[in-house]
View 1 (cartoon, rainbow, N blue to C red):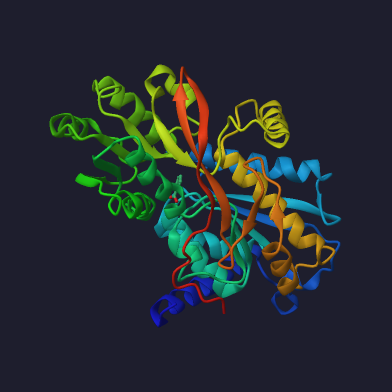
View 2: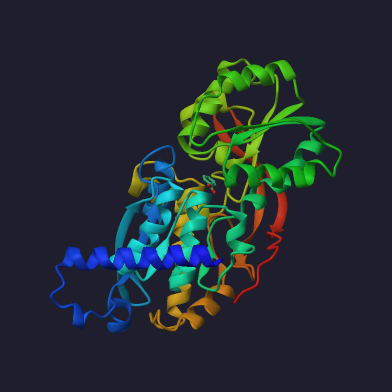
Length: 405
Ligand code: BEZ
């Protein structure tokens, strides 16, 4: 963290503490003691969700939240014997608001643990504050490579993926499918750019060529002109990352532009996750790589999907899995200290050496605190997701530049 960033974080801390004090009317300023230090192991664990509950990523935030709560409910609404309470804050997938929002959850709402976010830009700002404050944080979606590379920190874990991890295997898949050149199209922010880089890291060394790289402002869904250009370029394939509402629009527009079945569409699995059911026939033929598939035929995944659907009244997806596993990681950490979050070194050590039993299949945690996990190749066939195989077994992010303090 450079001096300027540090100053920003410190001043956010002052603003938030100042705001909290005024709001509380603080006659008792002299007796203020932060909850997490004052109350013993039996106080509730307060979880702060910083997730999108509005905008193009709203469905993702809701699935993470509901599945996290579902895992805690399975544990009798307790973590290591402690009750659990939640604060839900809408991140709006807005990086400029992320530092203040994170500081608010830690300093004003006195959350013991943070869970979130979805958006990579939000994650980078959130991680700076969480690292400075030493608050245990589980990133339950955002793939920003930086979080488990040069920004890695002892108190920050990820239950999801790195952006690179989600797409690196797809370059080799496409080469095996005989694709020689591709157009890439994605949103112009760290997730999009890092996922395209992951893809290029395997596609280019294997002899593939990139015809054109298209970047669109986040969260714009103005795809039409770009699809017209792609039709004229006639690449061997299109490779993409979009997610949530934007992904659904892209799939529908791709089909409406007459490209479905003519130019094969590949991408990070977020393109179809949580949206292929709504896209219907327009999603047929899309091939993606991801660390989860709805179609994994294991007792763990079947039970998870059934429980989630009967609780939430909508199907589970990768985001729900990541929320569920974030709660499981927290359970593992807290049980090691009988619920004492103050013994953070022991909580961290327990999560580091755990094997997490997940609906995606078991995974371990790398030294940089990112899942080491299988990446599946999936295809939408007749409106349903099929697993074609494991595109890369036990893939670890390179973790370049990670030095744990
Ligand atoms: C991201 O910003 O990291 C992201 C958002 C949605 C799906 C996957 C990644």
